[in-house]
Image (cartoon, rainbow, N blue to C red; front, top):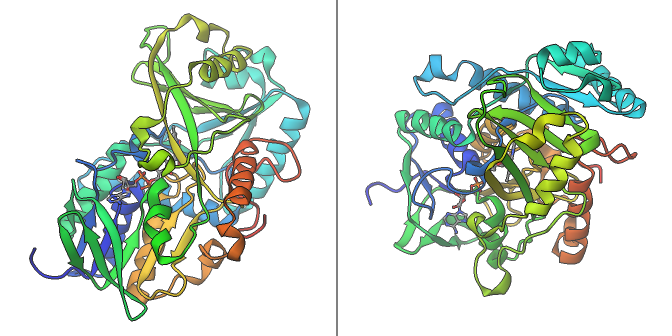
Length: 422
Ligand SMILES: Cc1cc2nc3c(=O)[nH]c(=O)nc-3n(C[C@H](O)[C@H](O)[C@H](O)COP(=O)(O)OP(=O)(O)OC[C@H]3O[C@@H](n4cnc5c(N)ncnc54)[C@H](O)[C@@H]3O)c2cc1C
């Protein structure tokens, strides 16, 4: 087994890979081991993601997180030699109603002072960017030329390869069965292959983070919720590239991928998944395809993309996004245990914030405390209410369903205006 690692990261999704990278960068020579039960990196949620990195965010902390991800990934290949599949596509948000256009303008006005370029477009200018859209359906649009997307699993592999260059080690096919605590301090993990000691433990276990921490008496305030998308068959009539399109009035997003159109749908009646339900662990591959749901997405998109119906289905892709009751990440120390940290609750923006998540967790393990700016992401912020599963599920479903909503709580694009507002 070699020398005892200084840091064990449980979970080889994009958050675990980014954490490993930021730890080895912040503290050269430190020994980091990432452990995952899957046979390879990014085999669960990360492997399903659309990889979109958008800056139209209500929460300044999240906007800074996205800004750092864009900065890091924009030059990652040149700086590290590892290609994260970064495409500076820009993104366009379409309004189908005057009220939506007012809301988009308000969001644009909030992010501009933070250095984000946003242009307002009429329907014709929007069509010049996205040729197949029907401009008469639009009340207007905003365009963010700095937005991007990555190939999410490729991006996780690039983070991991750069981390490995700095000495991090990745072990796959290793189930973690528990966190070992001695004298109120995390001292390692138990695995199916035996125990492994470490100075600190970080759990980035995606939808399964709560299962690992429940035996310690801590209820992680996160509910996994199904998110589904599909890709059409490749077709020469579809543009190979254009900006990511978000249509909040239809609760959909869409972008070109592999010669087809990839589109996703935020279900207004979200399905919460009990990952320990039925006496066995539910994995990403167990999430069943819901074809009627995606037919509904296609119906909603038809007003803007009338030709979409002509293209057959190439692939359904679904997974679980982890949602908190206030739509912000749950990230930081596990209460009552020293040297143990967690990050989950991606709220469907885990790729977008992946670089910041890694840097925040690296600061946790290296400084022994979280950076001040993420106080509002404290996993313990909901107090004992987090143990009330019924409340948690209800709030998380509500938050997810309001991702694109125009209500007073809504139009959040995945995060509350202030980190702890509920
Ligand atoms: C359909 C879909 C589309 C999405 N689109 C976007 C998008 O466009 N933009 C965006 O920002 N986000 C998007 N997301 C969200 C994004 O995918 C997630 O935020 C991100 O992948 C979370 O990464 P993670 O590392 O936390 O989790 P995961 O990728 O799930 O990694 C967790 C890892 O922990 C491992 N693990 C768990 N328990 C154990 C154990 N006991 N022992 C060993 N290993 C364990 C798992 O095997 C897994 O590999 C999307 C998600 C879905 C489902």
